[in-house]
Image (cartoon, rainbow, N blue to C red; front, top):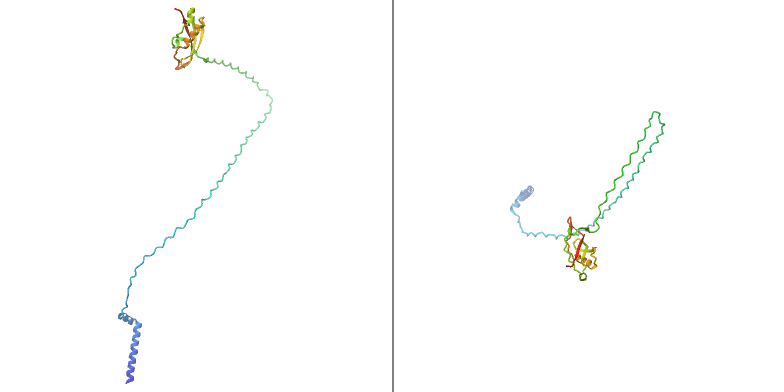
Amino acid sequence: MFDQRLLKITLAVLLFHAGLLYLIQSGLGRKLTEAVVAPEIVARIIPLEPPQQAAPEPPKPQPKKEPPPPKEVKVTKPRPEPKPQPKREPLPEPVPDLPPSPAAVEVPPAPPAPPEPPAPPPEPAPPVATGPRSVSIGEIQCSTPQPTYPSQSRRMGETGKTVVRLTTDESGRVVRTAVVSSSGSSRLDQAAMDAVQRMRCKPYMENGRALAITAQQPVNFELN
């Protein structure tokens, strides 16, 4: 009796283990275990740290660019142009002298042309005035001469007429006097020239231009 009971227990244990092994292999036992024992989940919140920005690297020094070397300029010398050589003209071939034919008629030479008549002589140029123009005393506007009678001539009773040639410049001023006809007394002649020298005249105009002139002025000396 004891052995049968032990055998049954042993068989039951073996069957239990066989079934348990089957459940483990089939995955049913794992599900039962997970259903019975729920895993404990622990969540921990970790604050995120801001990412540290890396410090910017300092700019690398750029190498200095050296200026390019100057370009070589090639100077081309102009080629000398060849001088044109003068063309040589062909020399004329000498023509042989042919004997005159008997039928040739001699032509008399043409008479010489008459000589050209001589050219007429050029007209004489008009005379060029080299000094003041001579005019009459009535063509100029001058004051009347006022001579001073010399006292010695008055005492001696000297009278007469003196003709004085006067010359004026472009402004009408008397610049020269000279006796043309004497009165016979040197004192009266000098008094006449002094009176003409004091005369005032206007410029002599011709074609809108003032000219220097010469004229004759008579001066009378009379005792009353």
